[in-house]
Amino acid sequence: MNGQMCWLSGLGGGNKILHLREHANRPWQPYSAFPHYRVPDLTIPGASKGWTTYQRLRQAGWTLVPTAQAHAIAPTQAASAIVERQGSLNF
Image (cartoon, rainbow, N blue to C red; front, side, top):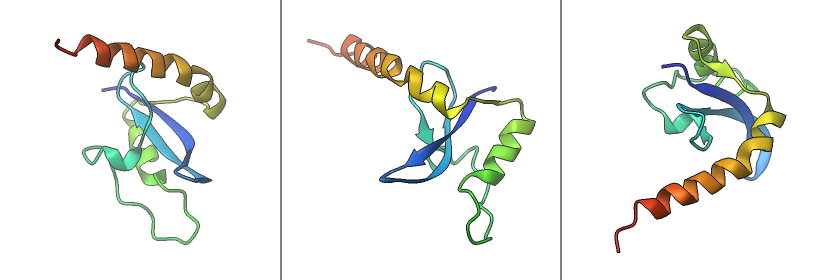
């Protein structure tokens, strides 16, 4: 599995944390939403949330997407997610 990683602001802004997505057409989610990939965080004060997970996934062939690029494609993802949800509704 070669997914994508990106450093994005967490809820409420603030410091960036690692976000993941397994497929390019899926929305970004915090790394903590993927317990099967997550590695325990460092206990060093001020350490980036997700740094150890990032290191492991990078070695596994995951791609790092620049933050600016992730923001640029976010509206397209949102639109495709809406279409996907609407297509799954049964009337």
